[in-house]
Amino acid sequence: MGRHREDAVSGAPDEELGRPDQFGDYDTDSTPRIVASPVSRRQVGLAVVVALLGIVLLVVGIITLITPDDPSSASGQDTPAAGAAPSVTTGAAATTTPSTAPTTSAAPQSPAVLPVTVLNNSPDQAAGLATRVAAALEAGGWPIVELLNYDQTQLTASTVFFTPGNAAEEAAAQALVIQFPEISGGAQPRFEGLAGTGLTVAAVGDWLP
Figure (cartoon, helix red, strand yellow):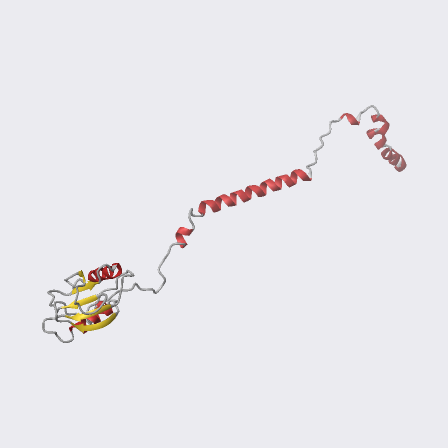
């Protein structure tokens, strides 16, 4: 009895499942298949490049927005150095001590400067008059060649004389009068008998340097 049961059980799969040749009429190739197309490496690389380019453009745009238009306007302006104080001229520094030296004028900007002879033509032949006038002229850039007393003709005002027809001496005499307006007699051609030679200043005492 036990064996019969074993044969019955062992034969059951053939009866239930059937044999493989029973499916001969079934076409297994007729079932549709879905096949995924593979993604190429080139497409992946292109996608990565596009993504990186987008990131770079985004970063550049952010930097452009936060950067000021003129970077030099904040740091390039001239500012005074630290600790530098403006110079201030105090009253004490601006005050000058009066000088006892005779007042002089600047030398004329002209090639007309010539040596000068100074005459003391004061009515009483005041001592030292020619020396004082000569010192003022020399300080103004005029070389002195001679100091003389002259009393033959009494002049009314201090005058500078030049040799008639000598254009250089006349120009020098005019320049001397412009530089020293205290020579109130002006520039005149020298006359016969006047002491000295060349450019000559006759001081009468109306100008006391």
